[in-house]
Length: 577
Image 1 (cartoon, one colour):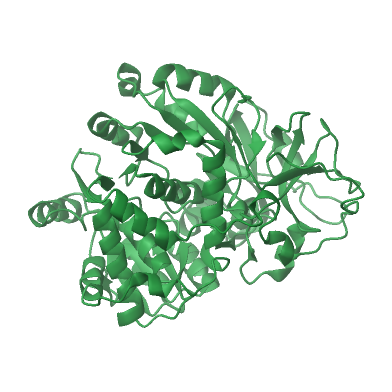
Image 2 (tube, rainbow, N blue to C red):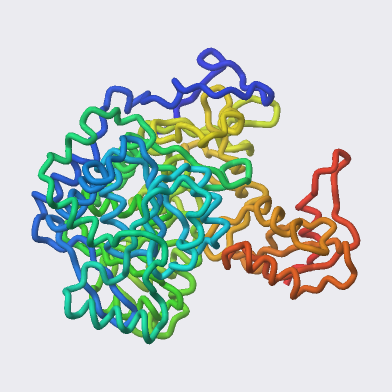
């Protein structure tokens, strides 16, 4: 259904100072109120039965070597892992398991195993430094860390001083046949130097699955008595207020958001047996969302561990001829500049675009080059994934974020606390069954994110007379770098801890119509401080995409009368290029 018109008779005028968190507003309502979403365990079981011997998960390496699990295989392997968690490790329901890995079969098997065991999944960005990883492990109170041996140095050190009691190592080669696995292990470890065994006490994923396979307990028993509206995923995001925090997502929210999406994109029902090339990271909600959609609809997922450089995708496009390709605006634009892609563009059935607005010019070129229908979505981690989509039919309206999903209401909140009329510009607020249950350990920030049961997105937008949402601007301070969200507050904390810095702040500088760079503005404490000193400090504490591209030394930072740094004025210090 479209967003309902709410008058002053149905909802009091919202006042900016009346910030309150109303748990009842997060329950199912409207068209979804009486609908009980399907449980994840049922979806796994149905897929393992209906699509048993069809390919489900493939790890595709840049050199073209690959291996595949069927739906039935993935069901068995994830069930054995769930039994390992519950029967061997004796983990209680709700225990947090952190997973840090690039895209590969092992990652999806692990996330299914964690959720099927009734545990809570916390995805950790594999690009995180040791300190960033440790910060998340401490915050989510993870007792188990599953990590790729590509990041052995980080994993060896990050678990110290946390609640982690068990470590499981995974490899890109876990599900390759034995002889091929041995050859690839030699290549990855001895030649490429990309993997090495962990030094800390651990078991391998293959060992954990083998131990779990000794038990025959029915896996559905682990979750059938647990409520669907319970914390299932702690997904870390900057949220609407800027600092990194755990977003509490539920099983019901995840499955419902998928059902909402399918309701406005009925063509997905015809995708059974097609192949989805997944370059998006599964640790991001967009990639995780796409994975569960594929599970439900019998779609084969080809997982690419690293899409950079983009030539890493070439052999997967050629070998698997995918029909479905989820991505982001910058990925589409850069792919279309690749000579190999131009010479032999794929023929796609469907492209799903998210994470950032799709430039209409890029969308038009992508359609012409790939013949794909495009479904563009708008959402955020706090909404599990999606709030609106542009349906790929006559109702599609390029340049907008589309229509609210069924059961989702979108309104525009004006500065005076009123809901805006058609065409008025203000903050986008939303409510629906897919919304988060709050921020982990942060009740005050949870309360600040809601106003009378409506979630504040921090985005500025407008709704036209037909109900289409248009995003005018993103959350004011967030910077989009190569498709990743960077929150300046986190970067500022690192900059201000740099020896020789008096004070510092960061801001996004637009360098193209849809691209930004992060710049740092530094006031020296010591005149001997150099650009190289600041860059080296950032490299030690921030993953690559969070590091400022350019360092500017300034005499002072622009501030408001109450001492708040004015980022908009920082941007004016850099002349547009």
